[in-house]
Image (cartoon, rainbow over the protein chains, first blue to last red):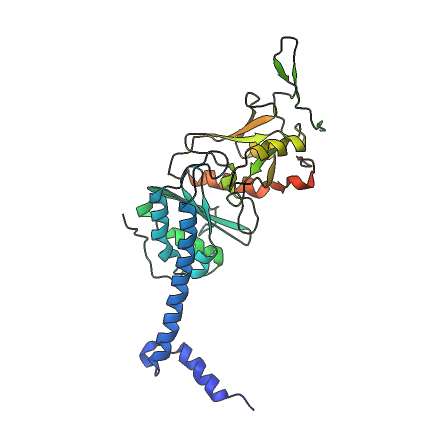
Length: 172
Length: 163
């Protein structure tokens, strides 16, 4: 039996047409809800990693490491929705506790590295530079984390940032 | 430069004071070993993490063993002694001293802890609950990439060629 060429063409058109002229909005809704579900699954998996790290006892590294601070966990949790705007980026982050009570998110791709470390009140970041001249290096108050962090991460993936966040305003 | 394995033995002198026979100066072509405890010191793909070379807050020194002098069985015995429930020793990250120094970190003998012990020294103590500057993570991630993972079960010498 021949494939339904007309049906396939209509299906392709349906995916590409804007909402305003979409004759079947229910299909668009299903697609959007699947995307939302994927994002929330990604965030849930990241939150499980945070719970595991928060449960680390003293001396978890054998060299006298301290527990990860509750504020560092909370600050990291607050940034997850921003990272999940590109789910691949959050999905591929390594969550690493540090022996003085902070948390690092590490990305490695194509020989390049991005490293975001989050503490009780401050963050520290390095990643691919957006222009020539070495890595991008940022640090400051967690509440002032700039969109440059997200731009640098997407540069690691060679994609344009798809998210809508213009700034990362975290809950106090 | 060739090193004699087991050269770190301590011998009591005529007064009963123990003498460490290892040279006090740590040479650039020596290998040093950092004991690792999974899963914290490894990524999900088995790579060594830069966090393996960080210290608790208020400290600047990171303990290593001078594995060019200590025998592999001695290094493994000491690392195994650090094990406890839920924290099993897995292997060593082997580093060339010259590489560590090229990253502007000091490596110094600390025989007061035991003969064959040394420390990598950071420039500043780590602050409780707060991250260091991005430069520190750049250096430590580079150190982690350079580190060679060796497990004790193979009983291989804990040294690196071309240091």
